Amino acid sequence: MTHIQKSDIIITDVKINEIINKYDKNYKIKNITSVEEGFSNPVFIIKTQKTDLVLRIFNPLTGSWKAIKEELVYELF
Image 1 (cartoon, rainbow, N blue to C red):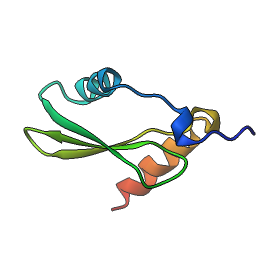
Image 2: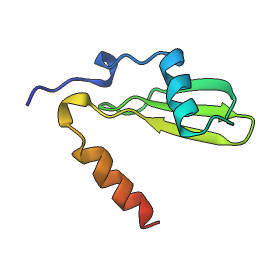
Image 3: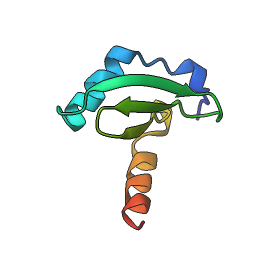
C-alpha cells in the first residue's frame, strides 16, 4: 500500500463547509483551525454558533474500513 502524509491530502474551507452542511444545515461555521499535530490524517477544529466540532479526514488510500471502525468504537463511549 502506498503511504501518503496528511500534507498530501488537500481539503479547502469550501469543502469543509459542504461536509458540515450535509451533517447539519443549522451549523454556521465561525472559524476553522487546522490541528498541526499528527502525521497521517488532517484534523480540523470547527467553531460554530452551536458548539465546537472536530473533523478528521482519513487517508483515501486506506479505504473505508478505518472510518467504519472508528464509528463503531465511538458508539461504545
